Image (cartoon, rainbow, N blue to C red):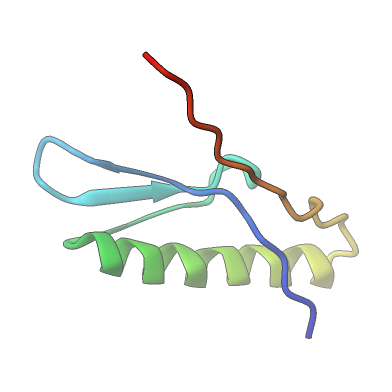
Length: 73
């Protein structure tokens, strides 16, 4: 099984829920009552999204590569 890395964004909404979104996969959004639950839920959503892409012979976006840089402010 191939492992693909996707960037996610997690923000807490006005009701205190954690909303997770995968910008690479339009419409792939999930949520959770905790940060950890939001991550688990978005992982499930991403897996379902990728499975649907495969089923319909759609291209899967390439895996990301990230780097962290530190700057003086």
